[in-house]
Amino acid sequence: MSDTPEAPGTAEDALPLSGLRVLELGNYIAAPTAGRMLADFGAEVIKVERPGTGDELRNWRLYRGTTSMLYRTLNRNKKSIVLDLKSPEGRQAVLDLVPHCDAVLENFRPGTLERWGIGPEEMNFRNPELIIGRISAFGQSGPMSARPGFAAVAEAYAGFRELVGDPDRPPVRVGISIGDSIAGMQAAFGIVMALYRREARRGAAGASGDSTGLPQRIVDVALNEAMFSVMESLVPDYSAYGEVRTRTGGRTQGIAPSNAYVCADGKSIVVAGNGDAIFQRYMRAIGRPDLATDPGLQSNAGRWDRRDELDEAIGAWAAGLPSAEALTVLDEAGVPAGPIYTAPDLLDDPQLRARGMIQTRTTTIGDEQAEVAFPGVTPVIGGDASLPIRHVGPDLGEHTEEVLSGLLGYDPERIAAVAGEDGGST
Image 1 (tube, helix red, strand yellow):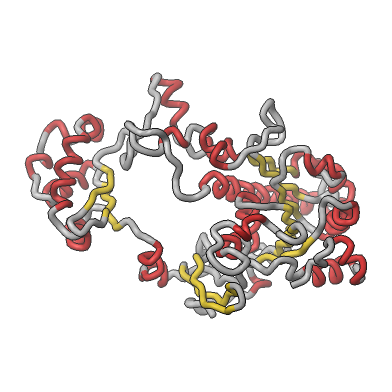
Image 2: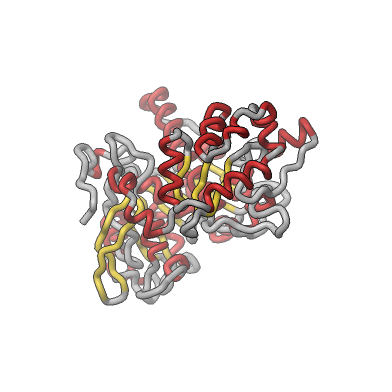
């Protein structure tokens, strides 16, 4: 049961991507994130998993039971089937499914599908309108394309990791697999773009169908390039000015004052008071009108030069107030600020709940059924709240028989053969 009632017009057949079918040959986070975004908005996403263990994500952050909440979250609204891709029968099943699909998602090391005989050329032969989304560490071409790599390595290659942490300490990582998530979002966007172009060409061609060539229907996402794309002006600043950005802790390079500060109750708040007019209100709110009127602090460049002085003044003020009181003062002064939330804070946040961004679903944890809160669907579309989560990530092979029998007409014996010894059933 959801905390948010289903909004009008959000029936599955009314969602923007309803009618599309996507075959997901993806594990871990990147490709499943792309698949989740497509599934959230109505695409039928069929996730292929290996016999016995399934996607390794089922065991990541597994505190109890057999399937992690990480898997349940990233694979919501999908169907799970089991295929043994190491067997000829399993690989043939993939090729049999391709004509029934609009797109395929995969995140194997480049060359793996080709080596198995189920690469883009073989898929294209069976479905010449198929969109193929490929996610890898460094892309499908170039001197590093054959190298394996997780997002942590790609984040380093993209220059991202060098900017995370304090300047007097080694670089650190953020607390989520941000490289995988951004690559997944770009893959989903690329697939939707390719589908749009395919449909536009099909409409223009009329009865002759879509004439888009295979290369134009391959979406090639590299983890390092996905992260490089969000590095703002890192390279242009170096190219134009010779400036090399370094770690700045809680600050953002060249912007001040904007930082996190510890309050009297031990909780931290983030304050972004770097706009010229905001800065003056900010300084008056913390009892420093002298800084508000200081001629050297009227522009961002001057404030950045004196960032340590400003942080010291703000930190001293914050340390004397509980976080809630400090935020009230800043809110009344019109200074953008907020608490640094933990999971319990997010669960109780009235703004998130008002927009359906916390949704409760009944989920299996071991031998028990439990009500578990999950993040809602973004972006909000067709209303003022999240679309409802139709179901959380499925059990391993939950839909094997439904898909292979319903779409392909496989009999039980053949289903058992392609799914390996476990048969792919719950």
